[in-house]
Image 1 (cartoon, one colour):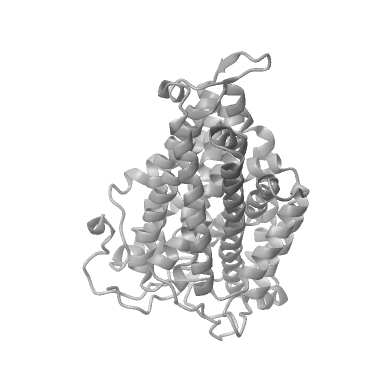
Image 2 (cartoon, one colour):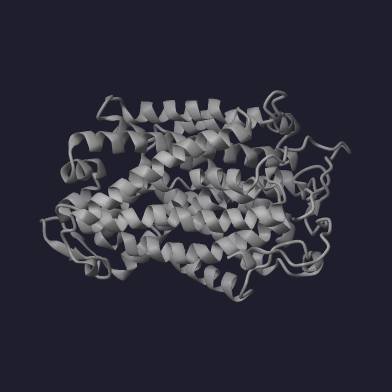
Length: 482
């Protein structure tokens, strides 16, 4: 794996100012404040794994997939993870080519132009605003053994706690979330062990998916349902892209970013997929599997004490996920304001960094507080819309990867380059388009409506002001690769 991740052997060059991008200088001629480079592969991997939220995704979102895909949930996740390998290659190349806290929009804007970058930003904004409350809403269910609280209120409280933690130093948060991550992995491993120890059905049920119908009879899960479920499966595994948002704060991003992206995807996939298989095979009945009551299954496989321990570990995993997501997502708002996406008073507020901790504190509040409010919106609506947005976002990344080796970008020998280019992004794009075609019309309309509104903002406010608004900055990597 080391050879695969090695950047090209050449003298590093400064990242050029590609089409649609500018050097790291504000519209008023001043240089904006820079984020501190303070984390390496270990810290980046801990933060990125936490944002992938393997355990919280497993225990909060996967149960909903059991109700739709039944025994086919593990297969859908496995297919999504294979797709994500190709997506991870795209992120790794683009993340080292354009190491910006703007993530997808900076990558798309630098390779395809500012208008495309804006469209990518809107999909990312949908994701960053909606995903944290989706995860936080699962807290009450797993606190139930020791504390009964309304799910909406518990979710809002978790979001506010995550906001406070997100105001702290990034290095401190890497170790805090790392400790929580260990508890996540322990809970996942325990569930996997208990599930495999109580296997009650053949592994063939995962290749021939079934679920309980309206009258208690087993129904076959159709191929169309499986494909539609891939959007949610992609959502479950999507956190590995956090590394590109942290690229400006990583030491030697040309090496650290691809290692973090690919290691995170591999480890996170195992933490999600292995317990999902165990639950599928070990559920006491098909009705229990469809209900997705993992805590109840653990108690049935062992005893109430073990069930309580697992539930509390899961609750901590959810809090951990919310903290890291607020950290990641505040960097997206910070970067958009640095790139002059908003009216000037808003830009000044979002780029303001805490003098003590160096974090974008107003951007952090702008992510966390609305996230607490969204906890009172139906979770199914949030989940489905986010699945569509994630699929669209990956599509923009795939197209950007196709354009990553032309013009000035072709000469950037410091960037990591994916194998099998351009075949990988072409295949990824085709698969994503097909997945989108299978989504519910209502979810497509909601996401499309937001996108159309954003296009109007682009057409009437940003595009007429090319020299003072939406100036996508491309930070230079001022550190030599090891």
